Length: 127
Image 1 (spheres, helix red, strand yellow):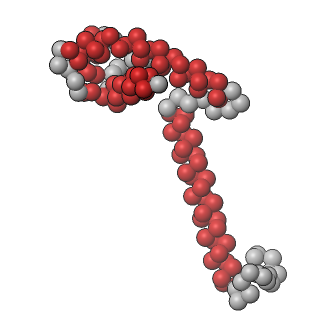
Image 2 (cartoon, helix red, strand yellow):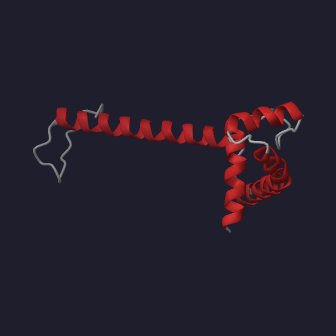
Image 3 (cartoon, rainbow, N blue to C red):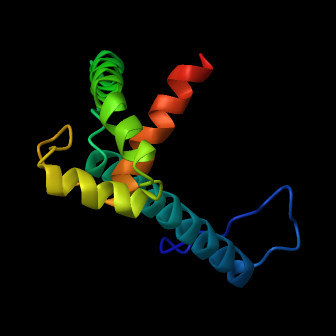
């Protein structure tokens, strides 16, 4: 458009310079939005520990198997806590932290972490 050459849009013959300028601006904004969403999704996947790149599928499969093994080893402790009446994820996280049971990464338990382990155990049972 900066070249000053008139353009003709065959699918929109009534389009003038102003209309084309608006259409280009809308297309650029759409491209920026897609780029930002992609960047945010990749950052979120990276924060969750997902591996990106050539060997990502193999690494993510290995990570999932490791998480399955850890959840299976944790099952008896969770059953014991449930038998003691500790059924909420918040109370379970507190109990695991008080017992000094580390998460798979060696950190502290949070309700979300407990919920993910429980979902993993439930999916193992369903299979």
